[in-house]
Image 1 (cartoon, rainbow, N blue to C red):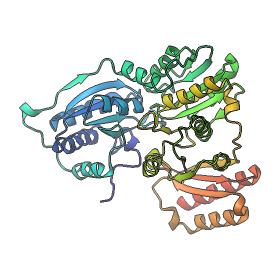
Image 2 (spheres, rainbow, N blue to C red):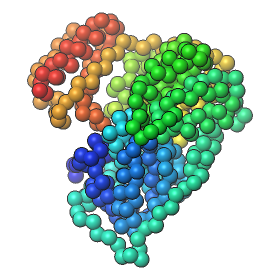
Image 3 (cartoon, rainbow, N blue to C red):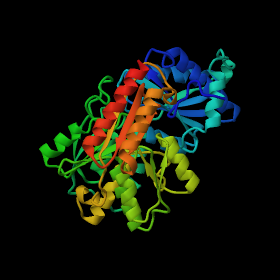
Image 4 (tube, rainbow, N blue to C red):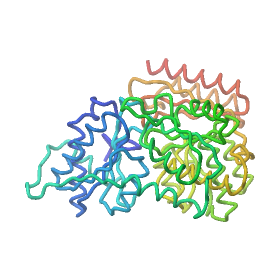
Length: 445
């Protein structure tokens, strides 16, 4: 069965437009409730980020689930990985996250976690899809689901985060900027690092429902960089709107992206004898990461873009460490999904133990020039059906030979085509990327 609504990371869109309107989300709650209830599971957690539309969709989901006979526990604003963790600890049937992650406030989405704290299996998503176009059938009044609010959710998750580094490890003496992206981690992230002893300079911690990801967080790390340099901090940590991405900045003001974080964590785990195999990246991962891991005799494989596909490769190979350039970092020896706070703690624990700065920890990895151009598109398109685009890619690959690579793909979360070109010569890489992007624009118009 083909997917009509679910993408690589749940269902997402502009608020008010199908499918992200109150009517659809009500039916989504009912359909999910029907599927879960048919499996004998009747309790679901709901968390959200700080978007103003979260109130709307939280109420719609609650009503839909209740009409299917499923109880609801409301968590309020919580990072996506926190909802995965709490779903497990509450022994709930599933966890639902209301968030559009790194997107602007006028977008929103809904994604699911299984009772194990992992992404919902494909077959369950397809069962939900099969019910979405049917009218709602409410259970008997005596069987309606109830709802209550979990008051200690933040504290539970904070203690879990702290438990993922060695007992006794302290961040005392560390001065750090923490950018909460005005999102779901705005309070929790600051509390985690402070409780471990760090001097925290918080930014992006004043959400108003409209400013999530706005010129802050992991998608705009220049703001964090400026504060690190101004405050003469040791480093900076930036999360995205729902807290599952991590970008860092060292004391020199150099941005440390997901590829470099993966390299640092691979070094850390290998030095501890705890790497347990290799590392999973994506087709977007920098060639420099692949080369640096090879020098360490660490296997490296590329998955399709999306933490779902990274997770599939990790599970298939029995490995523990994977992630994306954008900052989704998965440490399966610590938790079940990508988690920005926990990934940051793993880096900080290694930094403290090694008595080195962040810029020293990433030495040994030299990134190849990589240019990414996002081309807005008015509709979804199969790029392979555009001859001019395919020809421009063939010409670019012939021009660079074995010294570079081209990747073209339609985003699964935004209405854009991503043009990525990587090679040894930055001028050549930039020129080729702009050339292909121009051909894509002309072809889709």
